[in-house]
Amino acid sequence: MPKNKEVHFFDKNFDKGTKWYEKQFNEYNGERVIGEFTPNYIYSKQAPKLITNILNNPKLIVCFRNPVDRAYSRYSLDIRMGTHNLSFKEALKKYPEYIERGFYYKQIKRYLKYFDRSLILILIYEDIVDNPVSFIQKIYDFLEVEKNFVPAQVNIRRNRGLVYRKSILLKLYSQISNFIVKNRFLNSLANSVKNVNCINNSMEKFIFSKGKPNIKSELRHQLNQKFREQTQKLSKLLNRDLTEEWSY
Image 1 (cartoon, rainbow, N blue to C red):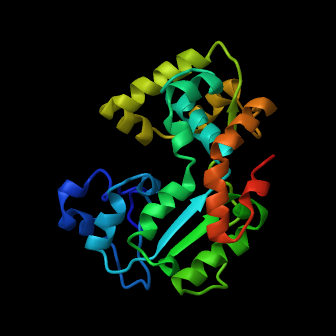
Image 2 (image 1 turned 120 degrees about the horizontal axis):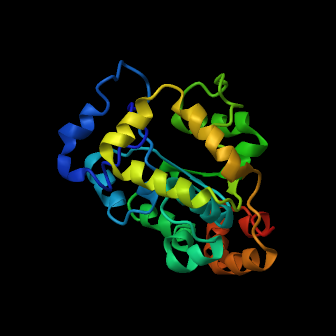
């Protein structure tokens, strides 16, 4: 995998050319499988065609989660990044992408126009929570590498689920985060400062709490209805009743 977690070649950096893309893998040393990780490809309208034009039958892996929880997760990230400090309900009205990005069947259908179904592994996020070893072994099996290998980090939670709570510090935190993210020099400096994660985590304790999002049942029901048709189509494709699994 490239050092940069998200390459964004097929959605943002395509004009840099294939030589630039190849350089992202310049540390390749004979490994059986190479790949990259850019979640935004699933939302891109042009990415499927560009991928099939440049790469020779690559295998694709996509992971979907409960669309309501995904929307709230993105909302929480935007709060932490200082994008806005709206309530979840207000943000849903102002930012339609919170909803649109949960239309999974529409997204995967674009890829099925260009790729055989056997080349696409569709995973469900909740499965990794229930059984991380089984989840990762499905990926290994799909990639035709050692299926029974269990990485040491398999049970380590990398992305903590945080729910923001009302705090007088929230607006200030959002403003500072937004300023740093938009300033290239400060962003680079912040990432290089020793123990910056420790400082950031300490600040978050006053503003965020761990746990599942506290979405009012009425709002969750309304959102489930918005996603229902798309979820039903995805369920049929996977032969799995996600409508029921994601209906809580």
